[in-house]
Image 1 (cartoon, rainbow, N blue to C red):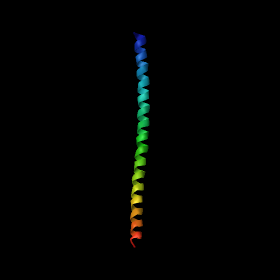
Image 2: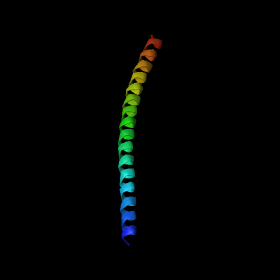
Image 3: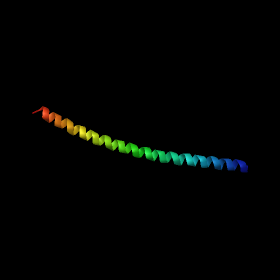
Image 4: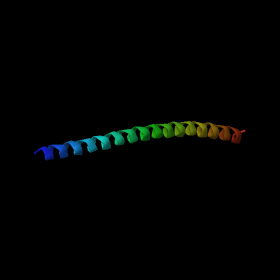
Length: 60
């Protein structure tokens, strides 16, 4: 019985470590994705401004 309890504790420890590393990786990935999203928004605004300039030059 003690061996089984020790084995369960070891398994729980391993699972906790895996969960913690997964949470860290997930937080890092979310941070990277948020950065990409911000850059995409900024690029979209730049493209919109360029499109407006091209259209205004074409209408002259």
